[in-house]
Image: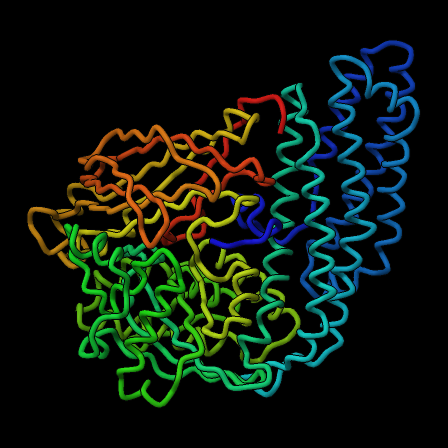
Length: 609
């Protein structure tokens, strides 16, 4: 997936509640206090100063916590409190960079750790003095503006007005996070642990601001600034996995014009089957049709099988243009969404009640659409229900818009794009360039500076097994010289029990009695741009030998694995990233039915970051 440094940087940080608290700095300073008490006469003065630094940071944290515990409106009105917070962080930085501290920073054993704490105080101070005020000004501007344009439209001008200032605030914040990440890794385990906690919280903050900024960059184009645009909304379900998401159950039509939004009815995939296959390359045909074991037809249902959103868009356009409803309505692009995205929308906009009285919420929607619906409703009704939910949630997305809702929606869109729960592509090259830069178009790894491994799964057992397939990954840096080397473990766990395999509907477990309850996965592995994958090994499951191949001019590795109910298959491999890499390795993968990407980052086996 193409992403900016800021955007893909530490994508592994899980989405957390909206808060700007840094209790980790207090823990670090407490450890430093103990260390300094042990270094003699100079240590006595340092001890006193460390306590002062700790007090100033505590005061700043308390005030920041009070601000950040509120909603977007509270943050928009935070300007009066910022000077006092900045005074506290500035004083902490001044003390931590005084003569005694600079001398101690050159001492053996504790010097590196003191330098790191100095860097941490600087980072916090710059964020409070520079990044947060810019961000607060943006929110203040939005709070004073009229965001709604009627009941179902958005006034684009306020978004256009703040897009550039928000981008600059984001640039400032991302730079501070990079500076933090470049600090020397503490040698003492307690300090290293506190540093790591701070790293997680700072990167979580950076990810959320980045997500909001990226959304604001593309919203005017998406909402038809200056002209009418038509997008096909492709509702996909990872319960039957395809590389970019899952089987396409239905497609709706989104029309936008100068902020006005109209969502047409969703048509089930059955209404599209008469109009043939989507355009695809010879390599895609070889990998997904000729090699099997499931022979893809590339009709509408299979259009998320491509790892790149652009290929799905081209295939969708080719089918769309043959349909009676599409022949006279040129597509400007596609939007691909899954149940996790719809669940997040419902959490923002309110519950959805189905015709039979079932209430879908911000907690149960993904499970309902990926599993429950196949247990409680006839097969013939499931796609239509998916369409009903998608239609209602998409219609509510931009209705009755205000600053608070815009803030939540913008942040959510960016976060969902990173996990491939929401992706889009525009056929206008200029617009698509902005969408790609914002990270909203799914792509196989193509950045040397922001390295990622692409791991894309396509279910070969016609079923709805995806809800039961849990994936986990562990990433550990093992070498920091001559291009970073990482070791990756990627695990596929079939959590379906033998009892469930016998008793659940065959529509879920698979309609072939020989494959009931089996996870049958075709997997594509893509190395980072400018890097490589080596030493691929597999444990557990029934697996074909991993083979190297070329898909549309890009080298990849391909395999096929069967995992029986209750069992697990694990792939291990080494990844070397480009010497140009400036961010840690991440994984771009087929989305699952939940927000958590299942990725764990282990402590590096190296002395420098």
